[in-house]
Image (cartoon, rainbow, N blue to C red; front, side, top):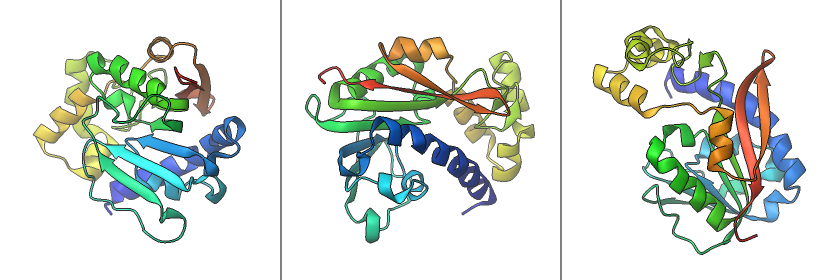
Length: 219
């Protein structure tokens, strides 16, 4: 793994372990549920407490990130499938729980409602987490205030952020990644997921991310 990847996993692990308390509170028997993780990876589940790792777990991704899961121990029953990023190919209410962590901010704005409707359609209960626009440090580029600036100016500052320093991306990769990431405000989250509850996660006393959770349409 690159130094950047190691850094990201270290930071993510801390906050995801804290977030697991919400999962335990809302779904204390999560390990026994049929769970789908939209855009999930093995790293997320490796950092989860063992008692929260479901025995029936499907990861749906739009692309193969090249990181296969261990097929032994508690990861033996995890399945990974590719899908089109739009229609989740399962019947209404098929999953007990659907999770989606740090994904929605990468989805084109005009496709977010469709994805959230699909999550609500196939789930009995769901958790959708996303970094908060309100937090002053943009988490993808690790650069303060870059997401609050006009987009044209923010893109010019990307090469000076921690992500670019560690990762050393090409100019095209910086262009594509910056164009892809658009953080959400709280009201945008609640508009996309009607009747949800929102758990606010804080860092240094500031709002860092939102986890919207609630019952699916057919629950």
